[in-house]
Length: 184
Image (tube, rainbow, N blue to C red; front, side, top):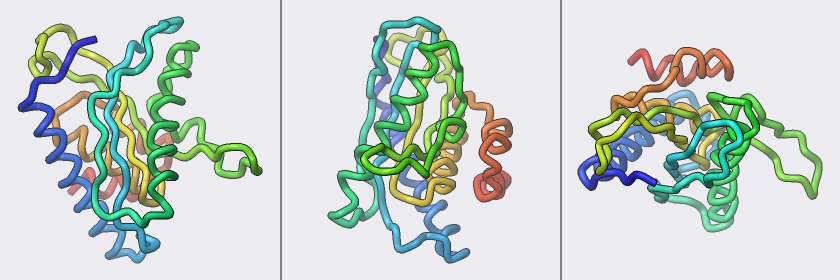
């Protein structure tokens, strides 16, 4: 699998942290943060071709902000599940742009709830170590309300200059919160 160059990796870390601060401030201003102050950010490259046997390649996983101890495992699990769900559906011929499309928050125990908060994007050439063709990626966050998780991913992709169908994703999830932040 291709690798990201070190400068881009650092830019991605910084962009995700900056996006988190913007999203958290906006959530707090609207009293929508529910006392949440951190989460888990992940970035994967993946083969988006239907029928691909390649597994997503995790390039970055990091904790951002402060996560209450009882939420650490939950945030770890959901940030991974959102991205894996998108990758599996792409393999099956369903090129979802966002995990919001297949969210299901009403799954009864012992089932696993599925939330929005992961988006697909394309990493343009010139930002990877191998400088090859554009490469599909998945960005995921778990820790904030799910519309905030999605907003963080969209802001980070925008700030990185990566290709993403921002308007379509925001429309699919009806994420007015993200739309407002993207306009700013």
